Length: 167
Ligand SMILES: [Fe+2]
Image 1 (tube, protein in one colour):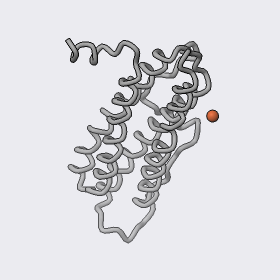
Image 2: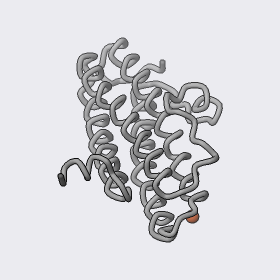
Image 3: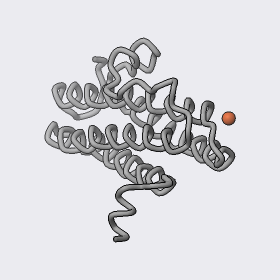
């Protein structure tokens, strides 16, 4: 860990860097999954969903960039290499057999929710470690991830939660 003029204890910085690095790998993996869905979908709603999936990439890239730059700010070395992502992502590998719009929506909703739950846990852990700024980054990412789960679920043809709420 590099020296920095920031008045944060070494163990605070180390904990925050570790939390950010794990989430960075997950988020890059998720970003690739979104592109996979954008490229492989075959569905009567192709145009709509093809464009919808692509619209998720830019905000996800912003979260990724913010996390990576916070690692660098704290004196760490962000590792966004494919090999690091492949080794440490906690998301299930995205299937190459996912084709229909609903299957992509479900697969992406599962992964956005998984990452959202990891990030939610990280808010408290960063806070407990004494880094309110990293906790704030996780809070913002969590809000984006939760909202995207809502977007994805709202596109599903037979969203179980929607049907339940209507009955
Ligand atoms: Fe494209």
